[in-house]
Length: 520
Ligand code: FE
Ligand code: CA
Image 1: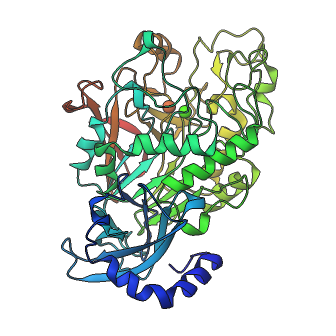
Image 2: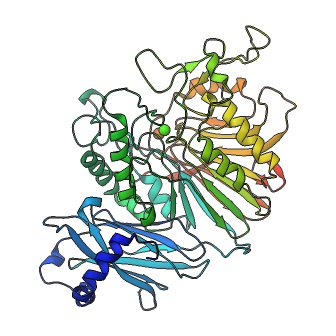
Image 3: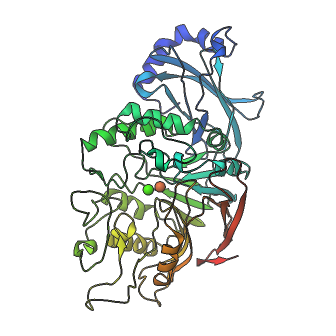
């Protein structure tokens, strides 16, 4: 709790005299109130560091006072006989009665169990762990996941992931989708609640509550710590910085509501509670000396997409000839400050640099890039919302990794609802340009992708892409040690079936010192 904002701390101190008794009573079953489950959205943890981790829950149910004291416990054992840390936090109505505990003074590289008590109700138990100490060489088992659109399927993927005994989950964006309920003709397995797209703080809160009520998702949150970054649908499809896709309404007010609701529902640090329309989520996490994880935000600070369709914001698919501004060298996806922060953070003394970001980084042309209208204008056809819409920024990023001797860079992404494995190069058009990094862009948990025929038709234009498959849903599972990264593309048999089986569709290995994925 060392990072609790002062106002909270003062309130806690004021409450302390009266609540030290209350706090201890919170663990005693209350005759009537205990009938109400106050933790229906489960528990979560995140941001693991050698001595700290963030715990999350949210108090719900009828008749909540403006402030609810929530007792929390962290134990070294599942039965809570050996308590490592405990305290009381205030869940406040202004923040959707969410609770964010920055637990410190923990031991590195070990598992902990945690739970909450409020209003006579006890939460389920979550399991979390700390990162290894600086210099430790522990291995890392982790998964990447993204894009869990509620009405496109069931969350069998989370149930399977919870059985994989992972140390860490990297969630790379599209935790919720803002769309309203689908029209009757387009309805599938389950529906979004509400009417029309989500726009207000209350609507965003309700949407998170709908998603987070899912037991499989809750189970994976309770199984390991997560590092969470967002993409566009946590606010609006294809938004860029201060501009939305539809161009209607007060976009920055909508963004502020969306960011607040995101913070309220994620295991994000208490100290990061939003104070205005902005919210910093990018950060760096070290896993001993094995890996440095850079988690970035490609939405909040980006330049607007070039050449949008008339009367719209958002993405388009364009040629460099018809959209010359595509190649403008000043264009940025991460924003100048974050770009510099990333470049300054590349590590040459960790075994690996893992870049947790939102979307496909490899160049993906939808037409033959060797067909040029003029020698000085590149060929090809590109989607403007991803890195292909910001090619100068991509070159700067990859160039900085080379220049700063970033060890074994592996780029991790999501967003495109298909599995991609790719070689990253400084010049994708030059077959002789060396492979400098490896990319794993994982498919969606549920969200529907493009037809595989379209991807298959474009793959020959993009020979650096080793694997590209739509129609697959699930996650990528990784085992990382000093020598190699082993990847398994875990794919559901049927995303519409909550009890779906899962299989490994493909496996790849990246050897330390040899960028590029090799089919295993
Ligand atoms: Fe998505
Ligand atoms: Ca997206």
